[in-house]
Figure 1 (cartoon, one colour):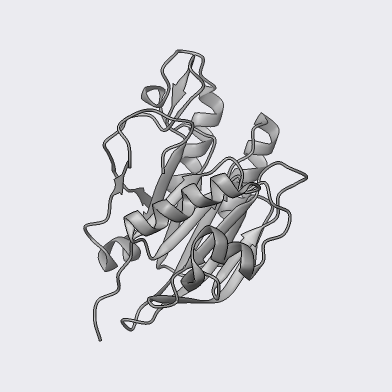
Figure 2 (spheres, rainbow, N blue to C red; figure 1 turned 90 degrees about the vertical axis):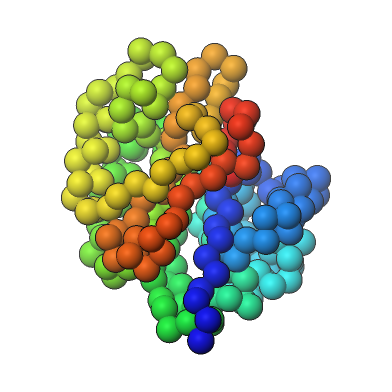
Length: 230
């Protein structure tokens, strides 16, 4: 058996409800030759195989899971290229979807959790409790990725308007999860509204997952600060 080909495209797409945006995503999937796609803010309440084929390509339409949007807000999608992976189980929470990923190229399987964190402070606390609960579901081989809508430290924001309580709670949560962060190359911040820049899109993994793929890192597809970093 060959080693698994794990190339993940992660992106807050700000909606998949128009053909132009779907074409942009599909072109990016083809350009990056990714084998796993994780998208946040799909703004779709329902996603079918035909939607996946149009947005990602037919190879991704057999194995996918999603979290429905609430009205036109939110929504999470994870899909895998069936040449390389299958999804055998999915767990859905309010802000996360977790899937059990099985490699078709090697004798390897692991958990992948995709998150789209809420905006409100109270909801953020509940979100972090949700992350703690997920730890009891997933195995030691675990990757956690997405748009957390939280920062870890002052350097993750371009101004001094900081909620240090939430920053501390986020750090405590990650310590409880026993995960390490994958380094980000090519960009300091991942989100901007033309006034403030922050780093809220991140990826964390367990020690076991890191040992499985020890050279993993995040690579920004653009050096410019856009709405969200792929």
